[in-house]
Amino acid sequence: MATTAKKTGSARRKADPDLYLRMFRTMALHRAVEDRMVSMYRQGELLGSLYTGHWHEAIAVGTAAALRDDDFLCPIHRDLGAHLWRGMDPAVGMAIFLG
Image (cartoon, rainbow, N blue to C red):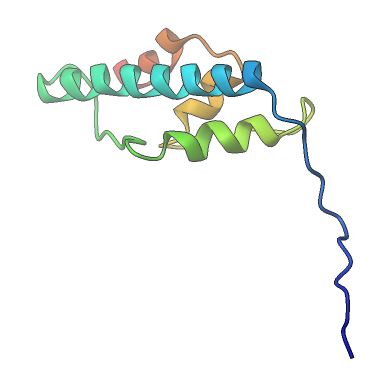
């Protein structure tokens, strides 16, 4: 006896090239800002430790893109891309590490 699986709760979005382009640009910005911060850290210009989100940019940006506007986003290391997605100025992200 054959059974058929019902699809429940799967919300498929139509492909949106503008969304994907924005996500890619945010991930690239995330990497560029953190590359600069690594350089500054190696020169002794940053306070304390530095934890980058290298190779995890898609996690931060993709998660932030899935959030609603009224969802909270709490700052923690390796999530700079999520804050950039929400519109944070990259200089503010760097300033956190400059003291």
